[in-house]
Length: 219
Image (cartoon, rainbow, N blue to C red; front, side):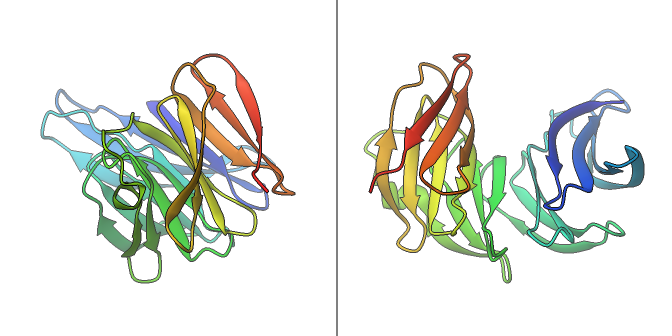
């Protein structure tokens, strides 16, 4: 039961992780990660991520497997990011961002995670080994006005580029330089999902406007 804000597959496709929210009592929110075996769809392990009784609604929209499939990274509405061991649900690492986490993606080598949020509305990059912030996208973008809410990020297969969806638009980033490269416009409503093609020649995006668009990467 409950509400399931996010579901993701492990890199080998053998597991599916689901974030689950339940409301045991008025003003109380509990968040869990449930792991299912895709061969049988059996729930093999569940662990609690948080429990709040402060009367505010809480969410867990950040959820991603590490490239080796051994860890799960979760991100919460209160800005808490946690790293968990998949086999037993052991908490390995906790750190906190300044705002609500709306999405998490991880670099192909597992060294970096990108977090998106309502504000700052450009992606932030974190070194997973020591929780160090290595890129503040909002500062590097040097935007004169606040951008719309950011809902999605994705690393390129080689880990050198990052695409983020914010509002109706997309922004392509150079990961090493922490610099925006190109803005992509065309959707008429909020961008909710982005992904790179395996050969890294194009990007696909989905939006509340009911369309899926593909974008050729700049040479």
